[in-house]
Each structure stands twice: as structure tokens, then as C-alpha cells.
Length: 111
Image: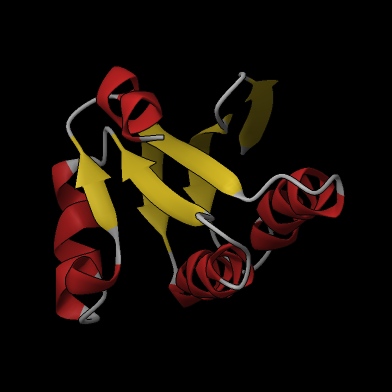
């Protein structure tokens, strides 16, 4: 799995590609922690390159969202979510918990 973080004026963009499983979820968690530890709580997660997400990845998403929402106007939004991942989020009952955008531009524009 590869994780890339880019800081914008209004939010941070975290781009993830590959498999998010029990082995690699900690790598995603570290990237998210680096952003939130810097006091930035508006995050767009670009999932266009994600091939697979296990429950460990879902836990990272929920935990990150809780952390972000504790702070004024903070949020974690998802962008460019592949159909298979969207189906997994829906099956887990997570779809209503996240704002999901068609592309990263719309996600960044949300903030």
C-alpha cells in the first residue's frame, strides 16, 4: 500500500493506493495521525487507487472521523471511492456515516 499526504489551505488530502488490510492499516493510521497531530482535522481521503479494504481499514476510517469531528468543523470525507469499496462500506452500514464525493476536487471544495 502507498500513502501520500498533501496539505492544502483548507484541508489535507491523503491519497491511498493498494490494499488496506490488517498489515497495512497501521501505515494509513500513521499518515492520518501525522495530519491530526499537527492540529489539522479537515481530511479528504482519495481512495481511487484502493483495491481492497478489510475491517482494519474500516476501523481506521471510523476512528479518524471521530477524532476529526471532536474539533470545530473537522471531518473526514471520502473521494473517488471504487465501486467494490463503496459496496463494502454499504454492507458494513458505514455509507451514511461519511460524505462521499465523486472526485477529489469536490471533496476539497467541501471544505
